[in-house]
Amino acid sequence: MNYRHSFHAGNFADILKHVALMRVLAYLAQKETPFRVIDTHAGAGLYDLAGSDASRTGEWREGVGRLDSFAFTPRAREIMAPFTETLTALSQGGRLYPGSPALIRHALRTQDRAAFNELHPEEFGLLHRLAGRDERVALTHLDGYTAWKAQIPPSEKRGLVLVDPPFEKEDEFSRLADGMSLMARKWASGLAMIWYPIKHRRAVANFEARCRESGFGKVLAVELHVDEITVDGPLAATGLMFANPPWTLADEMTSLLPELSACLARGTTARWRVDWLCGP
Ligand SMILES: C[S@@+](CC[C@H](N)C(=O)[O-])C[C@H]1O[C@@H](n2cnc3c(N)ncnc32)[C@H](O)[C@@H]1O
Image (cartoon, rainbow, N blue to C red; front, side, top):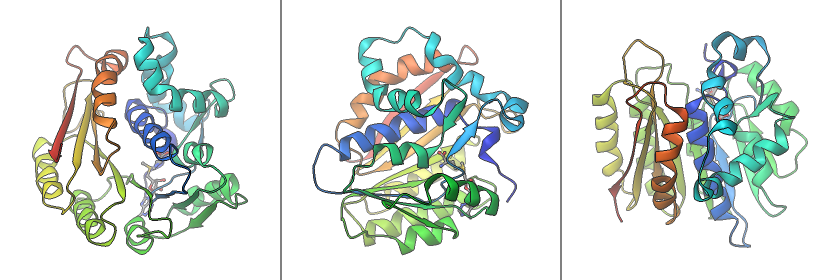
């Protein structure tokens, strides 16, 4: 386990992931009934952008560092608002970047619950410091796929599983696809949101094919490319796979991504994609 998210926090991939995450949570909060969020690979939860890890890569400068200077339309601002307002509340003037557990906690109401899982001992210690005293939150220190399997379906019956693995292992796409199929059997009405890097087109196509056959009736793929993809170069494209996304999400992403891809572009070939693999 070498991956540390502190090197990458606030990069373009985090922006897509966290904007979408906060839209999903805002949608879930439209009903009074409680929901649960299960974050299988939670990370530390809060990252110091002036710290040595973030400074070494400087990735955040081409991510969160660009948001304030881009002239977004009012519609794009509205779509991003659940994320940007939380960022303003938690970032201490732009010094910190909130990871998924910090963002999720901010979106929870008193009746909602979250389960954060993290395997790395140091990251788990930091996560515990951030959220250990929050009575709405349960922390586990397991393999993320074990946590996913063990914690569904939650008693609330309404909610989201966020799966955001480090992609250090060759079989990560296959384990994600297995998890999707298992979830379709155990919690067919649950929302799933999976993050993945796009480095090899064929690996992504195989993953999409398996998600089409997962058993979920509604599967949506969203991609953001900030440059041409290369196998060995820096990450240039990222994807999110959703099962049972909010019915509004595809339109929101289609409205936002032309502007977000222009804002975060590294080269002249930035592009995006929103595609239903199953359903609507
Ligand atoms: C991409 S980061 C998570 C970022 C976080 N979800 C966010 O959006 O802020 C992936 C995390 O998974 C953790 N990790 C690595 N292997 C794991 C495993 N087998 N099970 C659970 N967590 C793992 C890493 O320590 C790292 O913190």
